[in-house]
Length: 305
Image (tube, rainbow, N blue to C red; front, side, top):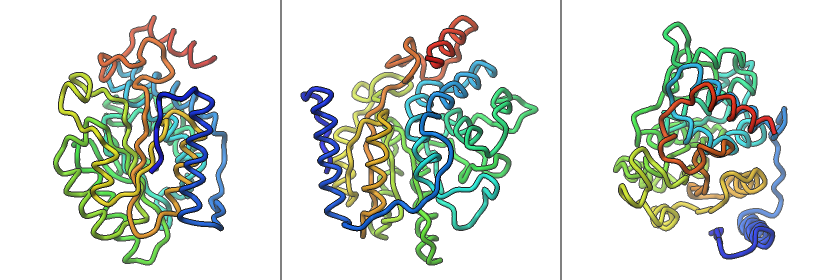
């Protein structure tokens, strides 16, 4: 298990995490080479964040905090890790993503737009009655969305089904599922986790967005799910703890996960809610609140730098 150690200096901490990642890689493989082709730049995380702000400002509604916290994870998934093709979004051999915390759709939509699934200008129609970008992901009408989500706690069950289907069909695609740390207070998550282990879904990678805030306060104040890593470990998952806003660490974590055999993987991504916008960072009130014009301008200016 990778250890997230807050007591080390930033440099020493990163060296330690990289060493532990390499140690895990050696445990699972000695010959891995990443075979997916990827386009674009991993610097797209800023563009994705700007898209998120554009969406919630344009609609004057939505969930910016938890969307901003997963922008780096989605950047790595869609511009490095996942085998996808914007020109053929329903390719049966593609990798799949289930955004179980569906209220953070602004992050997914911005990622898909910047990856080429649809025009970036469409982000301005978020939650507009005449647009297709609903408040929660819609697999029927939005290119690149693999599962309609929004009712919290259900996404891991969906991801299990996709992963099982892949094994039954002898496909080598992978399934990724992003959960919120507040969401995992839902009991269905743990029923699904038992199934992930029972069926040895090594083609499944769960990512927990551990930003420590949910709509009513901190995780500890509402219904603590800690220790998250130990809980998933007890359900048979391979555990990887990372800084979920560090691109390098995210890449290495997915490299490890891809080589785990015989069981599913859970990446606990320690993130900052509202990451990238100073006045939104670690502020619970930005869970589901849109910026006014002045705040919008400040946020976009910060994301330019």
